[in-house]
Length: 131
Image (cartoon, rainbow, N blue to C red):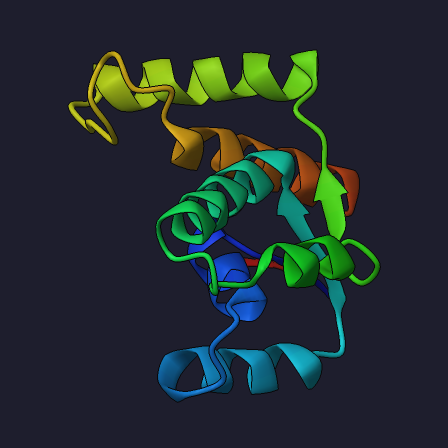
C-alpha cells in the first residue's frame, strides 16, 4: 500500500508539539505499515511555515524533524511530467467550474493531485491513499 501525505499531515508529523491532533497524527504515522510518500511542494509549504515561526518565535523547532522525516518518507520531485499533468488537471477542473484556488495561485493541491494520479498509474493494484 502507498500512502501520499498532504501538507497538513506532513505538518502535524513534523510539528514540535506532542499534544492533541499532532500527537494523534504522529501515533498514526508511526503505526502505518505502508510506503509513505509526499511531494517536494509539501516540504516547501511546511518548511516555510516552520521557518517563519522560528523567526517570530526563536524557540520554535521543527526543521530538524522535517529533515529527519526524509529518511522514512519518499519526497516526490516536481518534474516536468508532474507539472504538465497538474496543468491538465487544473484546466479540466476549471472547465467544469471547479475553482480549487485563485487564478494567480500556483495551486499546490492540484500539483499534489497530479503526483497522486501518476503514482497510482505507476503502481496499479496498490491502493494509493491521499491524506
